[in-house]
Length: 331
Image: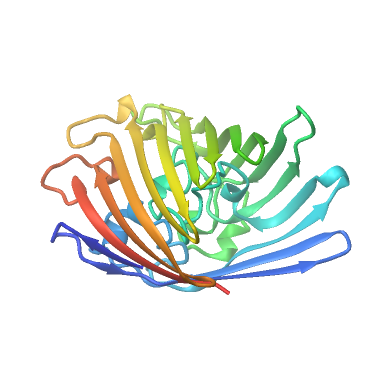
């Protein structure tokens, strides 16, 4: 992946990532493992200075922000009656919630963080937990129930597996979410609620030990080669810097190729507002070319305003445009 900012204060960025998945079916279920690797990050380069630009960067780093190979998921899914499933182990909570058909995949679709997952949901990184899934039955919606540790691998100071398994440390809590979904060949609707009980301080710094929680919705519709997606989110405005979020995305399939466009905004909580901070806005357009089976080249252009909510006009995070070039090969 290559990123080319229009602001000379932000350096060009070149990143590499590798993803490996392993599955083994058993009589009662499935073993699943996922390993990934990233190149190192540099604080002056685009993926570090403007983290909303590249959802694929920095997902596998050591405490010194050097890239590494890591085991990111290892779990077992039991098949239950009537298509239900129970997954236990080391997993990614976001892969079971807040999903859509034209976003959520930074390898093939939108690269910007705002178009991968809803940033108002305080997801842990890869963490220990359990997930119950039940498919829709008539008018009864699909159910996804997730309970995990509040701290995943990258949420701990040393980014270590030893800290990952210490789920009862004093500054840790629980992440729990319930999602409901209705879908058919033409569209989908998802709604959900979540809570993260890791101790939070209020934005006004007058209260401590607070929980973060919120609700989210996902709407999707497809019309032949055209697809639309809308995401909305609301978090606890006492502790969440970004209290509200909205994003709209469009994708047009042209044979084996695709074009996409999206716009998103995260609204700063009232208690977080002060000079130099304001709402974040992100726009992205991309064109994905299918060069050969499993081989794709994507050209993108992003416009980012107030990265990290920084609204100081002398700061490179205030406003920037970034061109991107992504090459992917999968087999």
